[in-house]
Image (cartoon, rainbow, N blue to C red; front, top):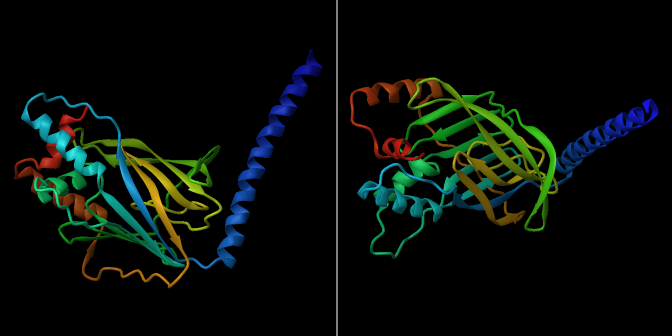
Length: 266
């Protein structure tokens, strides 16, 4: 009996070692690919929202459903070169006579993102450009990913799952809260970039689950002419300074539409 238990323990340990070796191998492949591959490309993402239930059964519920439809139709583009990337909303002409640009903006603020993001890998610097033009700068940023062994194919690319626990200040509680971010990255695409401000994995992020929204890759164009990332210029503030400013404004004003949406989502 002791011999059998020892054998099982040894086998379990061997499996763990093999999994760790696999992760180390992926990191090695990523490093080699970074050295020899030309890094330049553009990636399009579509949006898919989770099924949401609303507390309000009146007209506001109908409006929320419409805003959700707007969010599900939004598209975003990631552009990158060797050292820099940008992630932006794709402006499109809408022929629908019932289309409301104001509702679409609310959908971006509440369910996707109303900001453009710029990242410099060499300087380890991130710029977030808000819809009001305010520039928020974050230096020495790092996303502490935990890379697992779970995998799946997205299109023809083998992807691995990575998770990150993000802390934030709850709008209702005013206290520090936590949420999980899930990314699926492809080691065969050795580009350490991804949607919004999530990056730093040993491969391009093809799928990202953030809050109630999943960003799904729809098109990848690599190589060709070098992509130029034009960082916005102007005065910047820190994230803490911006949040303090917004908190002060919220004390003296009525709730914004996207804040009311947060209150209605269960």
